[in-house]
Image (cartoon, rainbow, N blue to C red):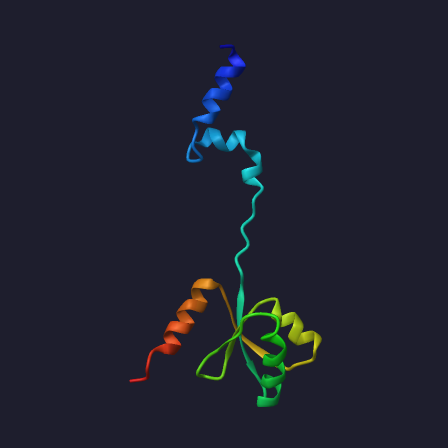
Length: 110
């Protein structure tokens, strides 16, 4: 077995937890993870909310909360702006914040 074969054999047994494996796989370092961002929005009137929901629900997921606010994906804000629908962004959320907002909203008032 020559030196090259020994190196290849050693590389096969490395795990990704081994820092040497990261040096041999530079493509792994180029992977970017994109987390979906969400926005909690409120519309100025019921007519604006109806127009927005009609368009947004055809393009993605919209969650309505009890307090009259809506959770929409962040790219949907561009669609609202393009169509001239007045809205107010209350909060920018990540996936964990969205889950917490839904859970808090489901809790019955005491």
